[in-house]
Image 1 (cartoon, rainbow, N blue to C red):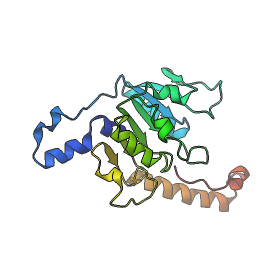
Image 2: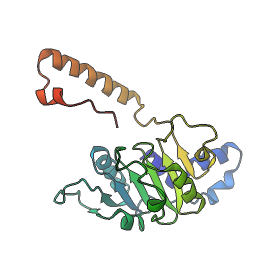
Image 3: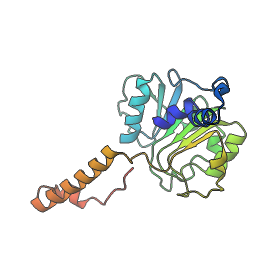
Image 4: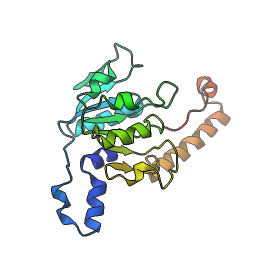
Length: 217
């Protein structure tokens, strides 16, 4: 949500301009409101749902794309399901990605898909690096097909200082730090400790014990 709002307000450019003494930059930021913006959520699992709820609170108009969501699955009021990603991209002003990286999703946002985006759209990726083809992304930004890219994840982490994304004013990037909060660290530590206690005490369900470990998303 922070990256979405940062992209809408062009917060990176604004901050650097003020630090360099340019107060007039506010007239050329191209800032926009999230309220009323056609917003496409790609992937509607736990994190996608949490993001959609927050975007709805800002007044965004929400569409949901998730090919793995059951056809009869109910959606929160005011959210519409879309079954064709290409068609949905043509009207989306903000696109937020919330899916794991798999064989099916790796490079999903490549030249073809990015070419369907509404000119000037904001693309936000807080899922996994590699879902967005970064070479295709740079081309889309240069061509104006995309207006802004905000991400917490990259294909190569940490990136090279020569990475073309790092030198662009229409890119906002953070160091895979979305979960790195004091509260998040406490939750992970206490949950891990509780799992050990439950296992030793025999109260951890057999189903949970049989599940393979899942990476934090």
